[in-house]
Length: 362
Image 1 (cartoon, rainbow, N blue to C red):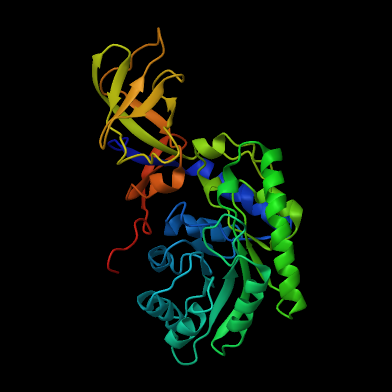
Image 2 (spheres, rainbow, N blue to C red):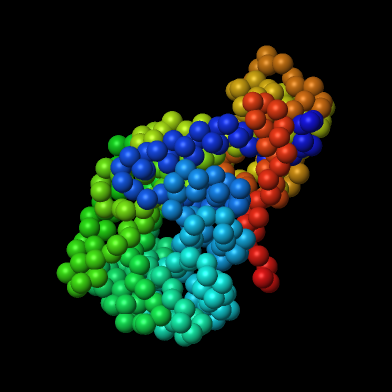
């Protein structure tokens, strides 16, 4: 098989499988359930690989992801609150179809609306989303968590499933000691919330959260029962710059391949991969192969990138393939319809990324 045309998303299957096995073994050895976040990969095949090494299910960020990946893993947790009737109806369809789905809520108004949408005799697990302090989603105070959990438990068709406590921005603090300090402060609020719920007879059976950046810290803290790590399977430049601890080191399994398409100016060449091929929110990708490692990539529009070469470096020829490490794997995957697979350096077909996008009018 020949290498795929560029720009393309390339997945090293050997590295992927080792990363999946490493995190699975780490969680199992510490008595933690592993529910990897599928927003990273959006792939039924990868969800299945994770389930085969012990994952209890997957997390999905959107209903579209959940609809595309249903059945690929034993269960799904929808990690973003839904608040509109059309989405309540789609959740009801999961329940009617026998899919093991759980959702999160962060406002009492969502509770009766969810219950009313369910089919007769159907039950839905509902978790309280707790804001760890980032101000994104989740209840702000322990007493709000108690009130919301009580409202869930009061409905015959709803099962109070526990709480979600996800510290998003803290995952990427580079130094492990600084990250541990930040999470320790967040965990004080989590412990307070768990205590308040327990005092009200609502002890959470599931406390889900954590991520690639904090999985080791979360395991040490002993408050979570379930880890939502996602990016460990691929890695990227952002996490590669972090001192991770825990089950790390993880291998770089995901790359973007580009081709040199122009070389008419001294000091740089132009690649065929721009912001439609590589997510730009976390900075520029890094060169892994095909050019001097000190070369610097810069976005030059939708279709192009500029590769600035260090003084004295050999210029890659037109047609040369350049291998790049994405700065942020999740949104980079969302730009591509498929993974081009490699094993031991040999092309091995492709896998679709079924859950990419938001689903439009689905």
